Length: 158
Image 1 (tube, rainbow, N blue to C red):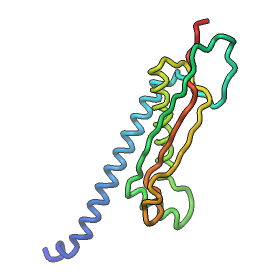
Image 2: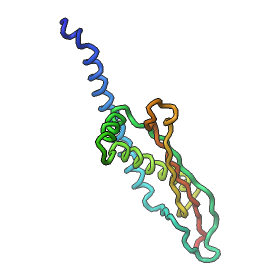
Image 3: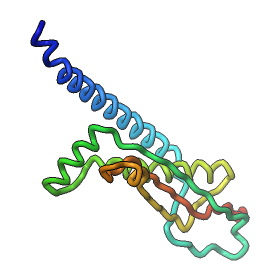
Image 4: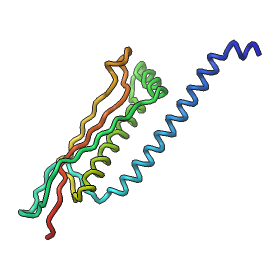
């Protein structure tokens, strides 16, 4: 019993680390599943990075649409990223963070366009930024913001 009390801090830390890792992994998997499901729903809504040539009089309306999201990194992934920075190489935990943020922002933009009856989105632009660097003493990434914006277009019938 004395040994258990002696290492109580270590046991508590390890238990919380396992709990945090499990909760973070489950949340990320649920978010990816939601993204995949919604991407299938909006598969027919075209998104282009360039402005195509439309036939004269075909465009009925065009308007700006955007989607924005902030995704936070969990403590365990931040710890793994710090270790990776020591030895070098790809930081996969940040890659998944940016991928989720980018895809979610595009989906939110598509939802906004579909709600207004758009048939396509042209001139897609993506911007990312980190949030929380200046607030942290150790200058590590706290969250990633992704913004997707473009011009939604509705067409007149042929």
